[in-house]
Image (cartoon, rainbow, N blue to C red):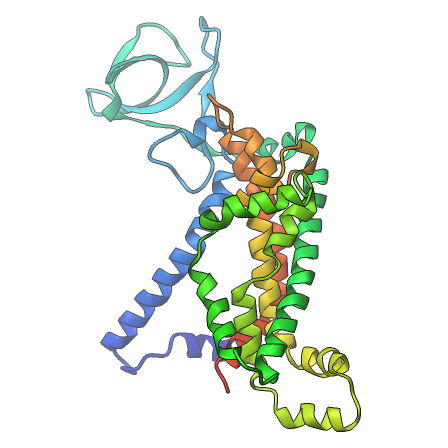
Length: 350
């Protein structure tokens, strides 16, 4: 542990801080904040009540204003710490608020109403986790069915994506044929075409094939990705051609070369593409929303839209279920993260 601390806190200026040390720490701390800050905010907000989510300025942790039952009033009143005109502080309960003036009473001895400017008070808060945000949705939110639909779409689309893209990459990296460069450029050019441009023709094709309101209509249009072909092709270029020639001399078929030699050697790049594919398919919202109209076929991301009504949005449920839907992607990343550096670094070698 001491070696780790010495490595992390070492300085270029030895006994004093060098300007590069300050820039490095600002860069690291700022990067960590930008990367993990939104996730921490999301998790913290998922435990807030609807009233706490509506408060401004917002807080990261789920705080709620304490309430007290006051004699003569039907509902519990919010407690505030108030600075009185004589300079003393007191805890009073708010009866009502009119503009910038709050009418308050002493919760222990209610009597005369005290008028206080809202700038001279602060709520008495305590930390409270609204666990019902995670439990209540399961009573009217078909989480298991939506989860199965998302898992089926993600796993199936990822497996087909790996097979289709690896076949295309194998042909573009190991076979010499006329028009290969043009084919590569044409595939890469499709990266500049956004989904919104091809959405209407894709919908027409899916509808003509009878895949509307079918999970296969969500899976099949997204299995061929130019990003996957590019990553796998660049990695396959690092595999020596002599190895493939030796396999052909041993009378191995092209399928055996692809399946038994090229694919195992391309495992790091396949893992990177698998991570990308899982994230893309799992978080996809727009295309499943277009293809699927039956509620029992919804994926998790589309299913969350039931909490967004015309006049009301149940943000506390949306945030809680969003945290739940993030867990599978995080687990996939944790188990496959060791392949990311190797896979991406290998795509730049030739």
